[in-house]
Amino acid sequence: MKHPDAPLWPQDFAERYRAAGYWRGETFGSMLAERAATHAERIAIADPARGIRWTYRELDERARRMAAGFASYGIGKGDRVVVQLPNIAEFFEVVFALFRIGALPVFALPAHRHTEIRYFCEFTEAVAYVVSDARLGGFDFPALASRVRAEVPTLREVFVAGSDTGPHTPLRDVPTEPHAYPYEQPEPSDLAFLQLSGGSTGVPKLIPRTHDDYLYSLWGSNDLCGVTEDSVYLVVLPAAHNFPLSSPGSLGVLYAGGRVVLCPAPDPDTAFPLIASERVTITGLVPPLALVWTEAAPDSRHDLSSLDVLLVGGAKFSEQAARRVGPAIGCTLQQVFGMAEGLVNYTRLEDPYETIVTTQGRPISPDDEIRIVDDEDHEVEPGETGHLLTRGPYTIRGYWRAPEHNKRSFTEDGFYRTGDMVRMTDSGHLVVEGRAKDQINRGGEKIAAEEVENVVLAHPAVHDVSVVAVPDDYLGERTCAYVILRADAGPLKPLAIKKFVRERGLAAYKVPDRVEFVSAFPSTGIGKVSKKDLRSAAAS
Ligand code: OOB
Image 1: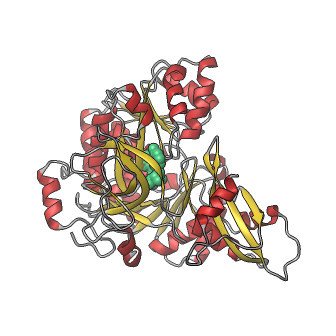
Image 2 (image 1 turned 30 degrees about the horizontal axis):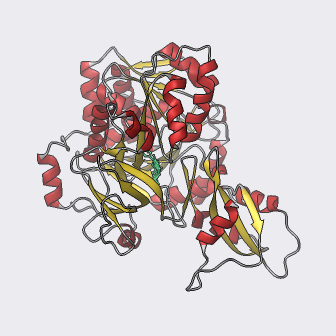
Image 3 (image 1 turned 180 degrees about the horizontal axis):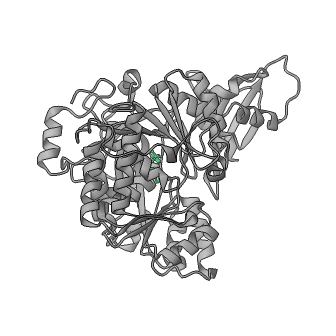
């Protein structure tokens, strides 16, 4: 399929995926309309912290009114809208409204700051930016929005959820009569949104997902995670991230007609009472949070017995930690190894216990093609570790507006180079053994070393820098920046580098945890910086 901004699936593949029934010809708009018809009075979205409960009928109606409202601002099909909202009900009202009018949400995370947001707005030529006020978001997003709006000419509108909207348009003033402003609705094969890549390069890449392909990943996940209309999903991780959004996540549960409950913070003190009061049946966590919950659960006075399934993924979950989940929380563990680019692997609920605690699962789809190759792209022997390449009905064929990068990240025949090192067990399950991409996985939060390096390099006293991962018991990995100062630079404290990165407006999780000053970097045989040697130096 041809698309001016992104390579989509070739015709023959698209036809195959449709014929196989993966792509059902639905859009998010038609899906929600159908659920509103069948499940009208059931609760779709609960935001208990703010006393909000919307039925399917209400959510659909709100999305229609918001859609017409956005249309009244001249926002329409194909326009990009950066959405940066915390876990609040309005997130769903906004994204379903954008889905309806075919405008593409760009899913920023609440942790992103000026550097990232300005880049998303500039690169996507966004026409609007949706944020929350400080009371909801814990940061002065309206002030950030003022700054970005002054810098990015395409950005015409800022909409703010909450009451302290500053000079911007209150989100609650946007909705209007559903038929007041006609708009063109998207086709199932159209792009639905742009998701962010964890990335390994200087700037984050944008991931174009279509209605057809993403909806398949939702119902495909539902089948494997036991999600039905009786499921109650707690959104603990940031709602816009691919894991809590689609694996099976809030959108999967809405697809099934279940209930989505929003959790404003991930700690047990906030989440456990919600599990008890809403009778939550399923949720998803990154490994460090799963550890915290596992420790807190046995002594908790809250009734967690409704919880059937706990998904853990985003980073490697150690076998020892995995073994503790069941006994401590009393639920079934389901490991998930996924990526915003597409491919998602799950251990099956009925898998043998040993498989659940020692593997990261197997693909959703019979048509997810997996290749495990060596450095020369030759397939490794069965059971050997190699680079994971994949292609399939919900894995992108290229990043958005990145033709040069796409040549490196995809093979000629369309396989995505995940950058993960894996091996396959006899049962077809994948075990993640490591990573070849220059990225740090800080408890599920991905950091492209190059992005941080570029910022540190801007410091006037810095001659060179190399950012690597250091093993960490709690987060799995933390970051360490090795810095070579300029010959003429005076003495500098590590804190000065951290402060500099923070003040440059990078998300806090990207600020190096550790800074080491060195006089030279170890080098590889051909004279490149040996990150491998730096990593082992940092670890010891
Ligand atoms: C999820 O998505 P992203 O896009 O933030 O990150 C993808 C990368 C993978 O390529 C891999 O390097 C790592 O995160 N990863 C894991 C993992 N799950 C993800 N590494 C080891 N073990 C795991 N279980 O992180 C994501 C998307 C959908 C569902 C779950 C996670």
